[in-house]
Image (tube, rainbow over all chains, first blue to last red; front, side, top):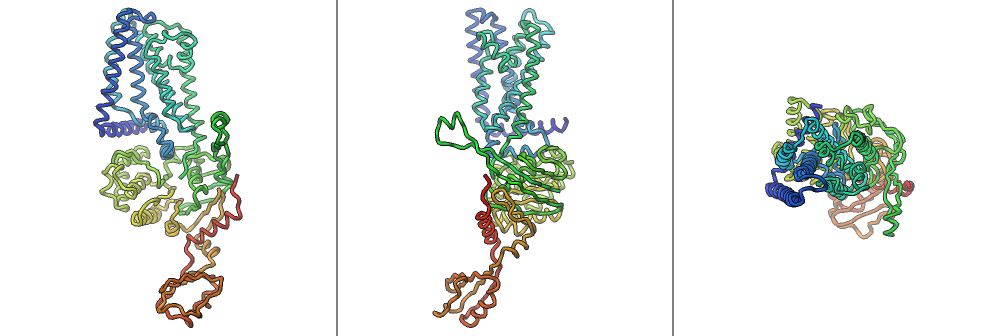
Length: 260
Length: 327
C-alpha cells in the first residue's frame, strides 16, 4: 500500500511538473474552466431567482445540485485525467510497457496523471458548496455524513466509468467518443434530476447510473430519499464497480497489442 | 528458464468486404495464426537470437513470454511462472526493451523515469545509485540523464531506455529490435553494451534484430521463425555449416582479364576491373585458384564465407516455398 502511494505520488509530481511546463496551457485551461463555471452559475442564479422554485427546489438547493456536479466532475478529472490520454498509449503499443511493470496498471493508466490544474478549480467549488450547504435551514449531521459518504461513492462510480472507458479502449482503441458520451450524460445531472420525465429519470438514476453518482448526494442532503432507493443505490453502485473491474480483466485477456 | 510448448497464438482481425453496409452491420472477422504450435527451451545465461522476416511471429512470441499477451493455446513457463498471470515476483525479474517504443516520461529528464522505476521495483538507495552509475558509465551517458527525453536523439534515448529497463537487474531480458533506426556508432555502442552486460550479469537474453550483424556478434544460438513456425533452432555455426555451401572469392587484378578467360556456367562471376568476385561451391575453390594462377595476374585474393544475410535469406526463401502460410 505504501509502495503504491509512493508510486502514485511520483506520477502525480511528474504530471504536475509536465503541466507547469506549458504556461499558456495552464492559463487558458484555468480561465476557460472558470469562465464556463461562472456563466453557468449566473444562468442558474438569474433563472431560479425569478421563478423562485425550479422543479420544486429553491435557488440554494439548485445551486447545491450544480456545485455537487462540478465537484464530482472536477474531482474525477483531477484523479482520472490519464484516461483522456489512453488512446495514444494503446495505438502506439506503449501500453505494453505499462503491463510489464510490477504494479497494478491502474496506477498508471487510471490515476497516473493527476491533474493539478483541476485541483486548483476544486477549491472554489468546494468553498461555495460549503457556503450554500450551511445555508440549508434544516441541516442535520446525519444528512451531512450521508452526503459526504455518497460524494465518495460518486467518485468511486466515476472511477468505474473510467475503468469501463479504459476497457473499451483496450478492446477497440476507442476512447475519445466514449468519454464524450460519458461527459454528456454526467452534464445532464448538473441540474436536479427531477426535471427529466420517466422513464428517462430512472434510466439516468439506476440504468447508467450517473444519477446515483451526481444527484443522489444532494437528495440525501435534503432528506429526500426513501430507504428503498437508498439501499438499491448502494447495491447498484457495488455491482457497477465490480462489473467495471471484471470488464477490465476480460479486456486484458483480449488485448492484441500492436505489431512491431 | 524459458519453456514454450506447442505455443499457438491466433489474432482475430477485421476483414473488410468493401461493402459499407456489410462492414458496418455484419462485420466479418478472420483468424490469423501468428504462432503455430512452436516449442523451444532457453536455459540460464543464454543469449538467443530470434530472427525472422516481418510478421513472422517474433514479437508475438516475446510478448507472450513476458506476459503482455495471452497465448491461444500451449504452455509457457518463464522462471517457473506463467507469464500471463503477471505476478509481481515474475515481472520484477524481467525487462522488455522495444526499439521502436518509448517507455520513459517524455517531457521530463530520464532521471525522473529512473526514480520512478526505483520505487516500482523497490530498489534501495545504494543499489540504485551504484547501478545507475555503472550503467551510465557502460553506455557513456552521463550528460544525457538530466535532459528532457523529448530532446534526445533516437540513439541517446535508446541508451536511456536500456538504463531504465536494467535498473532492477532483470534475470531475463527481452530485446526487440534495440538497434532499429540507429546509426552505425549508436548501433555499435548498444551491441557492445549488451555483450558486456550479459557477461557481467549472466542474464538470459532474447534478441530480435533485422540487422544480422547484431545477431551474429551477440548470439551463439539462433531460433529462426517464419509464418509462425520455427524453421531452425540451433547454433549459428551449425547453421553456417549446414546451409552455407558457397564461398566468395575476391580477386584484385593487376591487368584486365584475358579474352580467353572463361568460367563454367554454374560459377557466378562479377567483374569490374580491377575487382573480380566469384561466387562458387566450396569444392570448386581449389580448381578456380589454380586456373586463376595460370590465367590472370593479381595483387590480392581473399576467400570468404557467404554472408550470413545470404544464408538466412536462402533458408527463408526455401521455407516459404516448402511451408505454406498458416490460415
